[in-house]
Length: 111
Image (tube, rainbow, N blue to C red; front, top):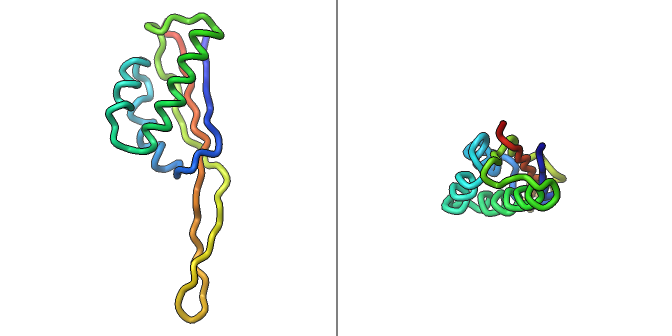
């Protein structure tokens, strides 16, 4: 059995979140939550909320034991990009890409 949670349209680059996702993949849920709590990055805070939600889904919806859960998948896919432009020299326009992410976590029970 596995439970998942997804946060969509989070205004942070997926590259920044994927570095943190690699840290918690395969770890037990309590260990992953403590890693995220003490990681000093904005993406860690967003990932903490999604992981906490996935654990709550597993406990409440599927009646899984929290002690047996581990992080099966953690990912940050690319969401829509807002495009803005800044003026530059000689009448040129310089694009600014404001990226967003869809952050997902899947927790499963150890056999």
